[in-house]
Image 1 (tube, rainbow, N blue to C red):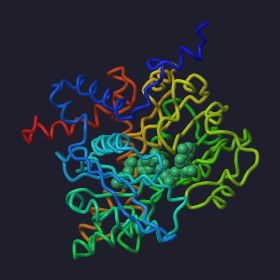
Image 2: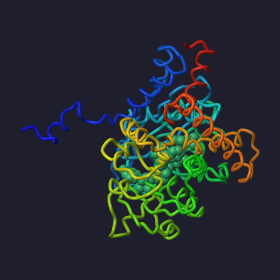
Image 3: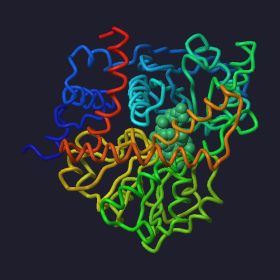
Image 4: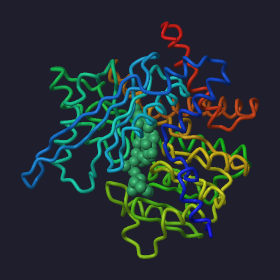
Length: 426
Ligand SMILES: NC(=O)C1=CN([C@@H]2O[C@H](COP(=O)(O)OP(=O)(O)OC[C@H]3O[C@@H](n4cnc5c(N)ncnc54)[C@H](O)[C@@H]3O)[C@@H](O)[C@H]2O)C=CC1
Ligand SMILES: O=C(O)CCC(=O)C(=O)O
């Protein structure tokens, strides 16, 4: 007898979790809807440049370990490329390529003079000493130094990287450049030319679009039950902003596990106890799995950790009526379709998480001009940009009767396609 399990284990029944494949499919559809030729798709379906590097680091035990890293530069038709660097054991070349494409789309959506890029190193910083991390960060910059720079490609933080790592990288690049180059990288400490508001920018941007999405669905954030996966840079600030706004944060998760309490969690306590990698659930006995968390009662879910968390396996079980993607690529293509059919409003990553790169752009502008803005100025500019982007994409999704992800891709890809056309590339 053929069991369901046996049928499910055949190749063709496995859900495609390849984030590069799924983003290409949406780009192709977006370009078709906008009337662009196949040539434009051929240009944009892959990064223009992908550098793979090997970084030797002498570890604290005296042995040399060689790490693999990547820098993908998707498209520089609009301007220099920009995007974060991820330190994570699951980094792959394909993932970094997809992440670089998403950066191009974000830059288009919030109208920045950039193309997209992304970097990654296969490593587990949670298992490394401060000295080893510094050597790895400096080694990466030396390895990619020929293709990055303040007018070429400007890195920033992402998963398991932070302002200290940006500071080491900036220092290393400045040595190579023989010039103090704060504009080489963003997300730096304020004393090294970092911008007010960059650390909380991703979460602030997500909070702004979530408030707009909630208005569309008649949900009051005050009292709304919210689940947030990820308690790092994005997730921790998000939980604080929403908690302070009166939301009931009923669930949070990190790489270790998840916590759920229908009466609401004590966010200030959890923030106080989390470690520098955004882990806090390891301190509790009554945890559930990340997978179980997504199936709990709530009004809003915010994935703010890693890719492929909402799949065809759990999309049917989600009880929220709004999902806002703070993480890059948390929802698969099949899950997006299921959620849309179920009438759940899905605010896509390339829109929702664009607040980070927006304030990174402000940081770069401030570094270039050598004149710095107040936190109030940054907040007000970010607010205006995120509201405009949300309204444009929401309205396009309504008028063209497409989901918000496709509408966001249509907006995000247009400037890049036009810039490539004017340059005579396609
Ligand atoms: N930091 C930024 O400015 C931006 C971040 N993002 C995206 O937001 C997401 C989170 O990034 P950050 O908060 O910066 O990273 P982070 O390193 O500060 O925090 C990551 C969080 O995810 C959790 N996590 C890691 N692996 C996990 C797994 N396999 N399952 C469940 N949880 C896991 C960690 O425990 C931690 O709580 C990523 O998708 C990132 O690309 C997007 C835009 C900008
Ligand atoms: O701040 C930046 O430049 C990039 C942020 C980033 O990597 C992202 O939006 O995924």
